Image (tube, rainbow, N blue to C red; front, side, top):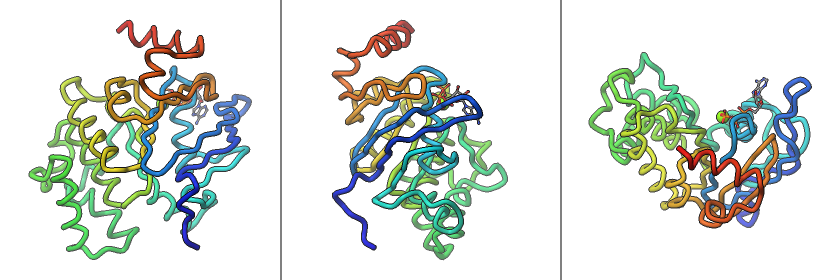
Length: 250
Ligand SMILES: Nc1ncnc2c1ncn2[C@@H]1O[C@H](COP(=O)(O)OP(=O)(O)OP(=O)(O)O)[C@@H](O)[C@H]1O
Ligand SMILES: [Mg+2]
């Protein structure tokens, strides 16, 4: 079945998620178009990470539907592995395999999941490592790289799977300040090249530069969706105004 190019790339409808008695996501509706960059922002505990994790099914959902490229999320097995490679994810911690070189980290998925030949996977990996500015580090181990370099490798590793959409969950929040921009620059470029991205971040400079829309979450709900300029200068909800006054105070 060919994918419907008119359907949103990511289609989230009526999604609920509970952890025991606690409801972490409440009726989440969000449609993300191809090539769109959506920044998700909101207080700690509002459900941002949980939402990201449901999109590549690291978390199951209790109600509603999530479809990627017109196809509902598979429950398990091979289709789920395929889905996971369609949805790239970069976390706060870099999650590189410590015992593998940078090059091996990036070629592992393409060889094992996508079935690429080693030589082909390595050529593609080098291209991606060059693109994120760490090509010269390919033979090193993760611990020999700075946090910013490791995070750029993590982005290259996700891109090597040729994902349809990339999720970023606070990708710069564990980095020293001087390394934040080198990672954000890679992400801005990726967005400009047309990658569909969902980015949980409080980096407003990034949101202003790269986001098509800002989604503001609080208490498991989407409270407000707006363009970045509009959201940062004229937030409509009291919750958003309150949140912004706190993060802007720093
Ligand atoms: N595995 C889990 N078991 C129980 N509760 C969980 C679990 N994961 C998340 N929660 C709860 O769900 C709520 C939403 O968590 P989530 O991590 O999605 O928030 P967040 O918006 O990403 O916060 P932060 O900005 O601190 O990263 C929190 O109250 C959290 O404690
Ligand atoms: Mg989180």
